[in-house]
Image (tube, rainbow, N blue to C red; front, side):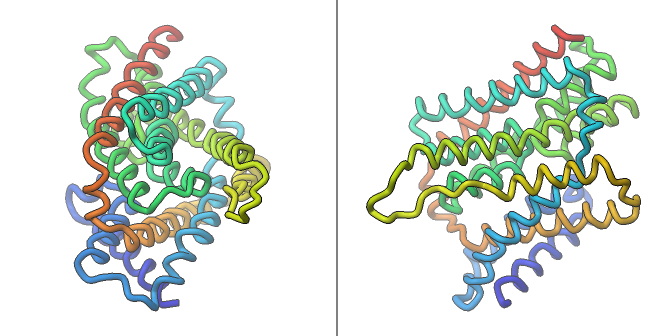
Length: 322
């Protein structure tokens, strides 16, 4: 209970800070991990809070990702269209492969490279923490990956609105580009609506369709990790199969066939974001700045390269299909 209360208090503080100017542009998940890291490195996480912190990083995280499925419907994919979904899926796969391969060439740890790849190619911090259920990288890797996708997603949020006229993108094409390439949902909304209502709505739908691909990506990584582990005579723990992702898919199905009242849906969106913020606060409470510094500059440069790749690759596909 002490750890859950601490993580919950930090998540609440993150939601409160979003009411301030400028900070409102940041996701409460991002603010939560920053506050958690600050608390851990300046004050120290109490020993009696450790069990609750671990519970938040695992059980609460999985439950929140299941609830995330209630924000998506199968109809949204239909609205994006075959060509739009092809752009999103090809961009995701190409970015993930590019980032993991480049990470290997740059000497970045495999787990950290996969986290940066997932955060860049799918949906920012949510994808990072979901992917880590399979990669089981250290908390410092999670914090580093979240920092990368936050920084470069924020750059895209401010940069993209200045480019549609220069690049000859209409509202539909610009919305698709933002949804296919910007990291966080909130960042997509902020950037897409700068070009008008039509661009904003289509960018949001495109991004939600991209989030839907979180499930097959995490499941694939889980099965590959389990297969590589093989029979383990030493008794060491094998990578877990992320069965909770099936709950995510089931919730998409529920939301597709049952009409959830707007008030209830808004409450569920808030609850999901709060629980994800608790999970990231818990990760912050386990993250040492000294270990982050030890990671060096190479992962940051990998995040920069991934950001540049997804922006250019998706733009080329959008231009080809528009």
